[in-house]
Length: 261
Image: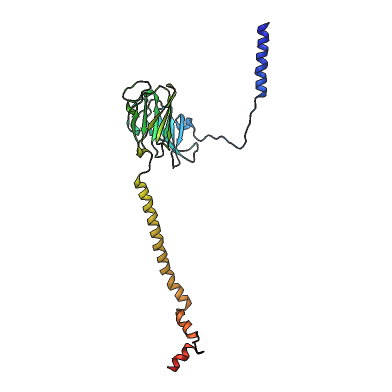
């Protein structure tokens, strides 16, 4: 009898909470499919945009492969292989020949370098914007753990994710298994634009101004004969005209003074 009463109270409690639950639905949004994995032959797991461009990087977890595509997206978008040869493993070098072991997360820095949380290989790896794969953390001990220190000697748990922090030029590692947040400071060149880029921008700006000046002078010379032909004559200088018409101090004009002489 007591069990029946307890069950009744539990039932009423659940029903009351379901009835009192409140949903706030906001209109104006729409869902569309822009990448069809069945058609393109990939299983998208994580997608990140490359800063300063319309390009996207797609991680196919099951295929251990990274792909690139670009906006605007549609089911007919062209998708290109970026890194990984489709075989799970551990191999650095040229991106097209590299191998990963089913990574589940990655992040992208401001220059387009990709950092991969390759958990099964116990490492963090970098795919440079030039298309070369290296290991930047872990890799020497080949074991799980929570050792800090020089990045190549560090160890991580079997469950971690990474995030790029541009303001600090670093990676933050959410080391779930070790219940820690770890930080990896990146190299300065990974975060800052090169001086060559700034010089190139300044040079293009200077060339643009110079070309504008030359073009303005050329147009001036080209238009001047056209104006003279259509006026029929050149106007006399304003100073001569003013002298002929201006009265002198004794009441005559400039021409009267010439006759007196």
